[in-house]
Length: 271
Image 1 (cartoon, one colour):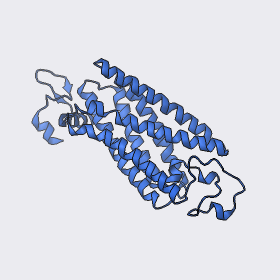
Image 2 (cartoon, one colour):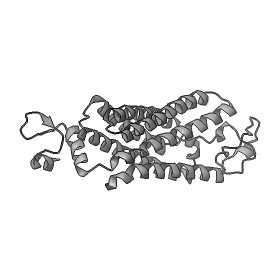
Image 3 (cartoon, one colour):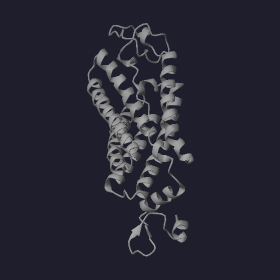
């Protein structure tokens, strides 16, 4: 077992806990209405809907979408921090998973596509976390439009790779679990998009619930990589770096290139 096993668990725990703290802060500071409050009203007065005041009446602007919860300070500061740290951890996890599959001779286009979509998801998270929806709506929506579909595509590709690399019954069960999580993510993302485009209190509220389900589902999926990361070593990172840089090493007694451990020390030192 290596220290890398902590990385996926840390991402899931830190991010899930963090976004719930952001939600709690937004409710306490009266920036959004509690998720259980269904008494939304189109005829609210200006005073009752002003940010920072107790919410006796809620409008569509107060629906607790994740982005809305992280719009105003002080919770916006934590929201940005979670987005930046989470994106960094996502990129590392994607890169390590890519290298691990290379070690298992899974140097396929699907593995490369998973790396690209995972890093794209991370880039989208940075934009979402640093450009709040009420102050930079276009950039925020662009970031969300990149991060959410890329995250969904990443987990779908990882489901395929999990089945393809399964070597035991436990590996197959993990692949089954990931298919379930991916299915839940797909359904919640589609429903969230459908509900979000309608200006209805009920549907906007359902969109918020589906968005929360999607994000938590994806974070749990990332956490499942702790199952494989117990076998990750420094050589895994070397293999990923060598393959991504296009400098494969020659295996002893073979004329074919390989990204496995039989590499010349000089080649490793160059990296």
